[in-house]
Amino acid sequence: MNRNKREKEYYSIDVGDSTFTVLKRYQNLRPIGSGAQGIVCSAYDHVLERNVAIKKLSRPFQNQTHAKRAYRELVLMKCVNHKNIIGLLHVFTPQKTLEEFQDMYLVMELMDANLCQVIQMELDHERLSYLLYQTLCGIKHLHAAGIIHRDLKPSNIVVKSDCTLKILDFGLARTAATGLLMTPYVVTRYYRAPEVILGMGYQANVDIWAVGCIMAEMVRHKILFPGRDYIDQWNKVIEQLGTPSQEFMLKLNQSVRTYVENRPRYAGYSFEKLFPDVLFPADSDHNKLKASQARDLLSKMLVIDASKRISVDEALQHPYINVWFDPAEVEAPPPAISDKQLDEREHTVDEWKELIYQEVMDWEERTKNGVVRGQPASLGAAVSNDSHESSSNAVSSMSTDTDSSQETSAGPLRCCR
Image (cartoon, rainbow, N blue to C red; front, side):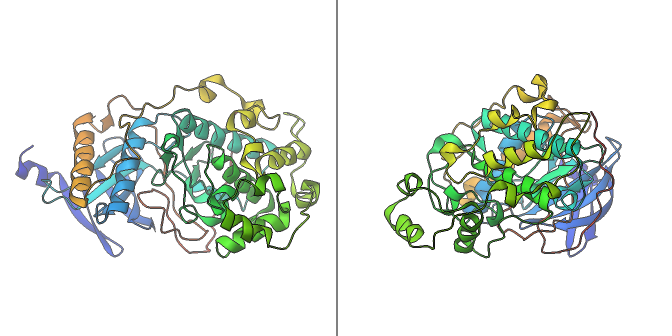
C-alpha cells in the first residue's frame, strides 16, 4: 500500500490524555478504562457493523520485558479459537514503516461486564455453575496446548448479559514445557496459588486455585484472601485453610521451609464454616444443583498442595459443573502454537520491535474487508471498570486495571441454556 493511500485511511482523535490514530472504519471513540500499558476505548466498527473495544499500546517494545509480553500475547491470541477465550478482530498500526513503528492497536468485541461487577450480583446456582463451566472450558482449551494462563482474576473474565463468558489477557501466559519457576510477583496477589507465593514449581492447576478464589468471591461477594503483600497473602491462606502438612513442607526449599515452619500454626476452618449454606442461593429444582455441591467443588479447588488439587478435567466432571457438559466445548481442538520457542526467546529491544511489527503486518495481510481469514469474527472481548487492585504486570491486555472502587451494574444475567 502506498504512503498516501495509507494516510487517507486513518484519522486522529484525542481520547482522554491520549491521541488515537485509527482507521476511519472506527468511529464514536469513547474511553472506557486504562491499563498498565495502554488506554481502552469503545468504538463502532462500520465495516463489521458492531461495537468493539480498541486498545492502544504505546511503544510495546519500550523494554525487553514489555516487548516479550506483547509478542507472546499476539502470538497466543492468533492461535486460540474457542468461544470462551479472547480472540482478536483486528490489529493495526498507523505508522508506515518499521523505523516509524511506535503504536499498536488491538481490536476486540465489546462485552457487557467483567466478573468484578458480576461478583456484586446475587446469582442463582444455574448462572454461577454455568459461568464456572465456561471458565473451565476456556482454561482446558489453553491447557490442552500447554498454555498456563497464570493471571486469572475477575477483571480478566468478561461476560455478556446472556451469561456467555470469555477469558482475556495473555500477557503473562506461559507454555508449561519451559520448566521455569514463577516469581511471587507476576500474578495479582489475591489469586496467587500457594506454590506461586512460596516460589515452588507450578503445574497447570495453578489456574484452578485462581478459579476457586474467584468462585469463593462470587459466593461471599468479597475477596477470599486479601493479602497486603506476599507474606500477608500466605498468612491469609493458612489462617483460613490451616497450616499445611509436613509432607507439603518437605517440598519447599530450605529457606522458605524455615520461614513457613516458624509461622504460628493454624488449624483452619471447615468448608462448612467458611462457606455456610446461608451464603449460597436456594437449591435448584431444575438442575438439582445444591449448596453442598458448590461447597464440595470449592474444597477440591482450594487445596494448598497442588498435587492434591483437582484438575481442570476433574472439575469439568464435578456434579456442580457437568450439567452443562458439551463435548464440542470441552473437547474443542487445542490451539496450535506456531512459535515453538515462544517462552525461550530472548532478543534485544530492536529485535523485539521487528518481531512485533512483523506480527502486525501479518494481521494486515490476513485481514480482508474487516474479517480475519480462518477466525470467527465473533471472537474477542473487552470491558471497563475493574473494581480491584491495579496490576503493573497486566500488560498488553484488554482488561482495564484501575484502582477505582466504583461499582457498575452488569444488568440482569440471562442463562442461555
